[in-house]
Image (cartoon, rainbow, N blue to C red; front, side, top):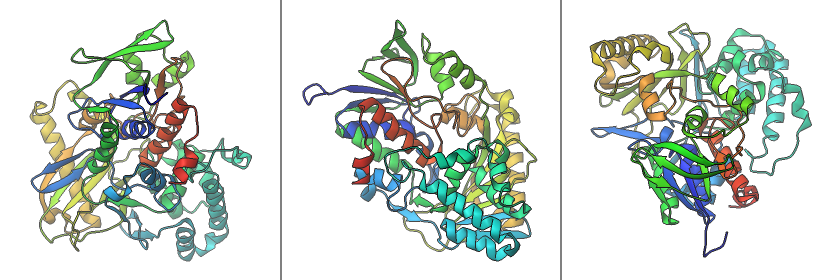
Length: 485
């Protein structure tokens, strides 16, 4: 690449991972075009307004913003840290976990602090909890790219490779309350303990125990900052531009892509940040090896959620600067067992919450009968089911936090179909094919992958993959530059 002839990149999907990848490439001199199918960019960064209330559809909190960790350094590297209003969650009760209506735990920030807190409550488990803390710190210290270091082998982690998260925890404790507390983290990891790989689980726990942060106001502000980097570098971020076709020449190179309006886009490089199973349907030739294709098609991570976006009556419910989990009211065994609740942070936050988010893991299959309908035309049966579920959820949450039902001014309900339409996964999965482990480099010379299917979801997962994708395209390391930002 030269200054007179910069390389061009076309990114399929303007969600979190696509925008971060595009912004890093744009900062390094590439001319980037991002094509987003929705009217609003951002994917999990999307926000919407109802009156003067702002609701975030995806990103509520994030980790990796501790000094020297990837998100903070990446924001500095992209020169957007000062443009965002970032606040820490409560240090003393960052993670509030109800294991049932009679047992509530307020976990403080930091691995050592959280473990010390649990030891005070469960002194007979001290030895196991100390060993668990040592293992978590060992894993945390080995997370090179999370800690913004060049990656190197860590043979000490081999002992965890064949364990699932439940097996990992039970090496140190079998106390049911402690297991339940750690299981609550899975509500945002994407699957129950017995279905989660030990190292992925431990990575998420380590990252989250180092501290949570949140954006004040709309999460869309982050998407706008990333898009601005792309456009100011001569690129484009185009909404309402769903890609329908990827034309590959002789199984070697993408020649162009086609959107729904038959516009064609050509570039030197192409990056897909959408669900791999959707991308496969767009290509005219094989993108991966057959074994990878089979893994993509058979991979099951299709749980979705019901989300209640609540506008609260003025001065009726206190603002809680924590991440709250309560057990789910539904008896599902293959998806996370906890509901998570937030009172979002406003620009001028006082002692009372203005809005509330209640996220309830739920199966797409429960709404599959309406999958061929469109928003606003799904019929009275659909509306009745939404309202019945919302009533049951509010009544249930009210047992833990009395007064919620009386505090509601307006209620907006998102279902698995909502997530299907906005996130793009055919089954409305929150995390699509997160953790699938597909390669960044495809069989096609100029086609690359980014996003949660490569490694992990959440902001930290997509940011790490974005860095690795851009390094693969650029054929050089960026970690040192990001560390020094």
